[in-house]
Length: 182
Image (cartoon, rainbow, N blue to C red; front, top):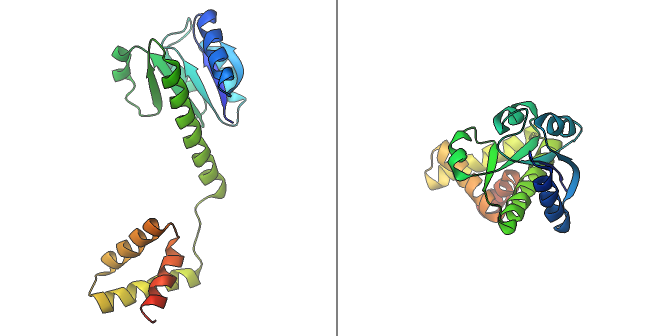
């Protein structure tokens, strides 16, 4: 499970949020009352989420966002009047006062997205071999001839079939070739 750093200016608020998260199965390695402490803990994580308030004694959330590593996500718990300032798209928000269900659901969504991102980052883009590229090119050519498609239309057709069937483009190209009698 993803690590969550809880950072609020009032220690009591931070401890209450920590207790809620721990009860719901989240790992909370740090509870902070300053932005500097949150940054320090965030830098030691491979990945994670910082759940924080709007203002700290030493900075506001936007300065914190700038200083934490990019692989650490931020969940801002603040009044909706401050949300318009979160225009970067890299800060997720939850309304104050906190509703436990909203906070937990949002964190679970963020944790799931982070897992997919880490997996994609770890595996990297899958490069196709020359043989696989030729297979896709051959399937596109067959679609172009038999169905009077442009190369772009044939490519989009294979791509859509691939997404619809849950297979990769190479497998879809193989299916097209076998169904159309290569």
